[in-house]
Figure 1 (spheres, rainbow, N blue to C red):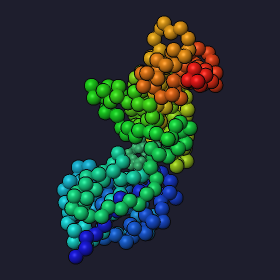
Figure 2: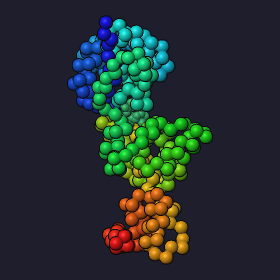
Figure 3: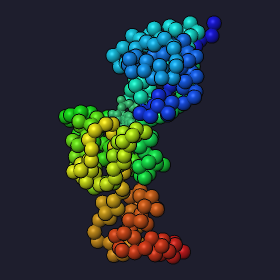
Length: 278
Ligand code: SAM
């Protein structure tokens, strides 16, 4: 007897038009839908005329519900896992069931769609080539400070989720640990009051705009500060450049930082390096 498939199915993060054709089809076809909040999901299903049975599978019941879901999958039935919004298993339940399924040799299949982190990132105007999804920060204490400290040295763009009542505190902490970096507050994505506030972390902490609805905070990664590695005493900029290279800094960044420090153009620094290398 063949086993069923576990589908990880995206649902809208605000705008119902973001429901995909495939998500509707799969949610109609599967034998069971495992939902974070059955009341919430039932409204979505009613809207799309889907009548598949529902079972609760939230962070508290994921383990016990997971076992039942696994039995169904092993007996050949297919199950779709949905959270309240966006992608299951992204700051939402789902990851435990996926692990259980994989360990039992069940096929796991994504049904992609809306996600708040990536929606905020692509409209942030910040570097999208490398990024870290940081999710929710620990709420208080040593753990929070340690995580903030760790992320403060990341050179890639950082994405945080935050609840509205904690937003200002988190922006203040980010400004304190990360310094003057560019950031974007993405509010109410895909909804009527969608907006993007851009500015330095300290400016956004001071003036976060309307603190209502849902937020993603996107923060510029640490810009390598050549000053940290250029200690005093160099005779000329070529020595300073060499020093950066020796300390492991990438050529492009070393040129940029040397140019900045000695008030030269990058081209001038580059040409002198070529001349010196002969
Ligand atoms: N699984 C979801 C996803 O794929 O994005 C995330 C769920 S997490 C429990 C909820 C958090 O996601 C919110 O507190 C907020 O930070 C962010 N979020 C969800 N929907 C959003 C929206 N429409 N606009 C801005 N942020 C949103």
